[in-house]
Length: 199
Image (cartoon, rainbow, N blue to C red; front, side, top):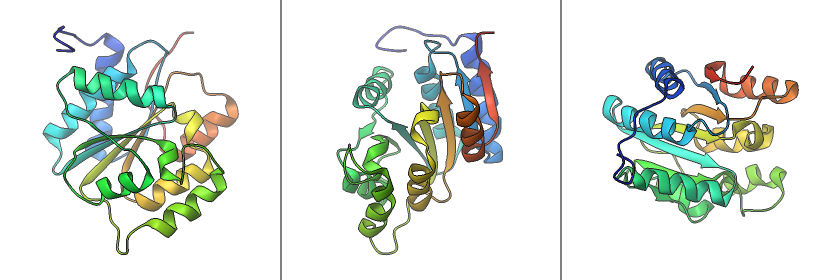
């Protein structure tokens, strides 16, 4: 029920979630490429709920690259009666990951660095210098990266791997991947989990 309205998955959402469930069981990341407007946020909801019910000590972190997307994700999950913690800063994100209190967290990718704007090359150095001694994110972590072709350049991906080395990463995109993006995205996340696109 989404804000009181019963919703049933479209075929693309159903098969996308089913394919992702198999990957979760195998701990193998990848990319879900569903056309824009096909309901990727609800795919995230169904997959997150399934992970919570079927994985021991699960935690889901949803990464976006724009404030309005961060707000949208928060609203979607609250609409289906799931409490989601929205981080306020890089330090807050590290603090939340360092405890087991929140199972569902959303954050801007820039919070892996020192500010919401700034030098991407400085992110890695900055986050490493602020991690508590012996830091290790708690729980079995699954990271959903929205618009993954935009946010996961080499440097930003290194930041995430630094603080979440054993997390399983699933990239979501609604945009046809251009040759350069496609190669980079597949190298980083793995192969396509499911595609639903227009020919």
